[in-house]
Length: 372
Ligand SMILES: *Cc1c(COP(=O)(O)O)cnc(C)c1O
Image 1 (cartoon, rainbow, N blue to C red):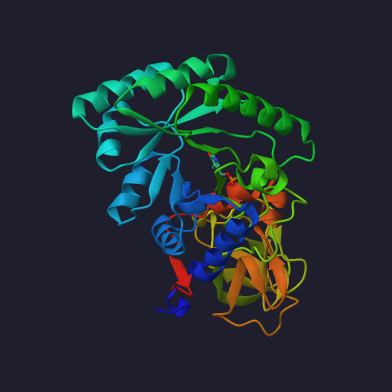
Image 2: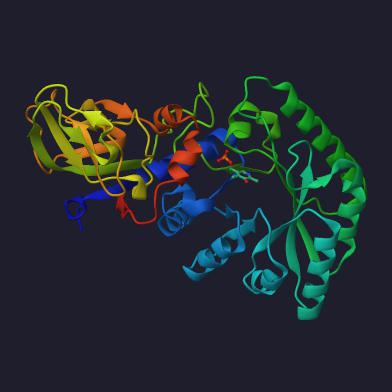
């Protein structure tokens, strides 16, 4: 199947993804856990996980237990850690499929013990410590008794200890440094009572790049692995580039007379006779219904005019007299040396590139290039 079969699609270059992973491994100098939550940041969980497993990934990180079970279903046998909440009714599934769970609270820990004992099978846990995120994690003052409890239970296997940074992507480094110091103090204290040290991890993409001292035994890389900088002005390791492009086609071209209303609500009127094209992408695909959107056609940036519809929107083609029906249109990605990045779109929409790639709708076919 070639991309000719699609009107609107996402193109994911698996070679780029593989190389990004290998470069992150090189940069980190430690284990890299690809984070594949949210459908692998929009790239398609199945293909991304299988590709990265083949490239050597020993761990995968997901947000939810369904994502972990899906990975087991498709034959992923690397370690999998659920970073978020697991409903008690799903704990048995996790145990049966050797899925590791985050634990961040004593009540939840007791629940896990009860279930694991009942099944006569150990549960693998990573204890999450809140060193300054204010989200999941046991606070520092309760952390030692919590870890000791986990360590004392025969049906619990304390496989990891981790924390998460709130500001690793910000120019101001003091907050992260404090998080690291506090985490280190805890680890020192814990080491005194513990025979076999578990896997220590803390860094997301930004942490991996900006805080080499926080790489420990493993880093948890999401956004950088897909080739996008965690924040403005943050450099990615050399040759880490976006793996995904978002494309559609020009499906109609008309010369509209002067003063003609375009799209719902007639928010745009032609000023003179104008060449207006229709492209096959809309808010049903994740393109926001707001002014200011641009796309690339024949290597040039053109404006989307009028309201974005669910499945289509209109483009101003006066600069492109040669444009033809069927032309490839790039919403995000490169064309003839021009680029619109996820970060560019995020800037336009007042958000972050993470939200752009996670917002790519499920209905769009994911078309994979350079599978191994
Ligand atoms: C999502 C997530 C990550 C990955 O973050 P990036 O900024 O995309 O690298 C790492 N750790 C945890 C706990 C997460 O939830």
